Image 1 (spheres, one colour):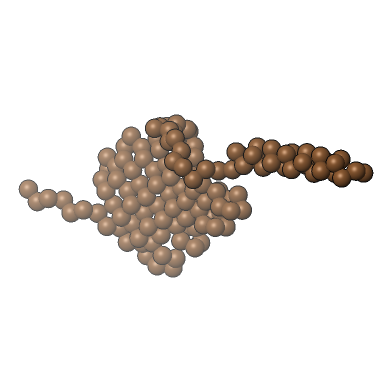
Image 2 (cartoon, helix red, strand yellow):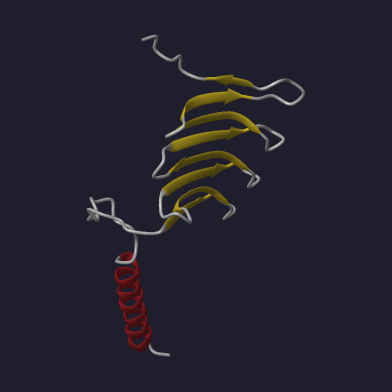
Length: 131
């Protein structure tokens, strides 16, 4: 190969590499501000960990009301928060996946129930006003 041919091939390779770098560089994420949608509409949103396991859910229940559920890293449900036409509730589950704290509000009243395996549950309700 002559020196002129080698230089021509080298220039062609450099041009092709530069074109490739420019093209792939445009696919890289940009540090600039991105457009944000003003509203995200969905019937369910799931939060997943690095292994792809669902650890959080925001979803509509069978009655059409909003609910939130959080799971531990192994996928066990640990927290539930729900709303209904009658009221709302928060449920915290213990390591045995049994209700440990139940906070509820409905037409029947408001209560906080504390439970622990092997112990009697304690229910706390607001006092009625004397009147």
